[in-house]
Length: 266
Image (tube, rainbow, N blue to C red; front, side, top):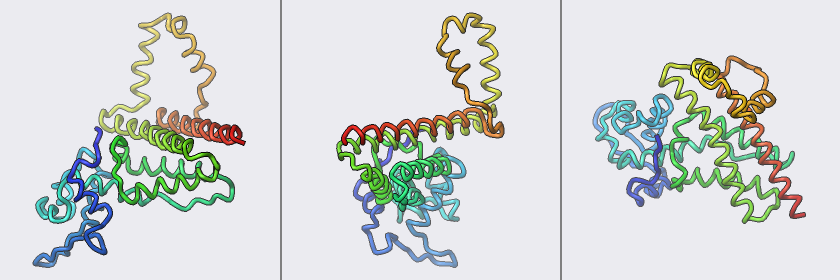
């Protein structure tokens, strides 16, 4: 499921994202009875809770209203609709990411910490990975996150034209690596079949149906024979272990490439 940001009213969405409607960014209406007034913040936090618990597919104004003990109609005074809510949820949850990284040990250590934090954040809120990067939200926390990464990368003293592309490489790499784990977890939960069960059921058939597999795909066999990592923690599903190792090795290769670019410009 892919969700595109920025599908609601542009002015209303941007106004809510940047809290241009008042000093607190909320529109408060007093309701009769003991219930406290709603706010944009309360609605956004409830939306995040729904998505964290049940996934993006479960998100609706009705579901958010039920979590708040209100009807969906009661939310529309504050947030025009689901499209605007997704924008607000996405930007707000990004506020969890750290912004203060110590550059004393060097840019490489700082960028590694940034990548680790972003990986863990993405798996805490896997629905974020379903919000397409094709159309950014353009909210304050999204920009703050980019500003944080740029502060670390400008310590390399590489040219802006190069760093522009490095940012893209790092963001897409970390996001894609985390997405593999998120989808593996979703697959097991949705199908009721674990990674191990799925692989065993199908890989066992290859010997039967493709007896000349090794002759037809010798490099694949070599890769599996020579490159397979030893099993270290069987409590973690196979695909998650593989994705984590790929993340670690791949990040190292990217950082090595940045260092090579630095030396090239010396």
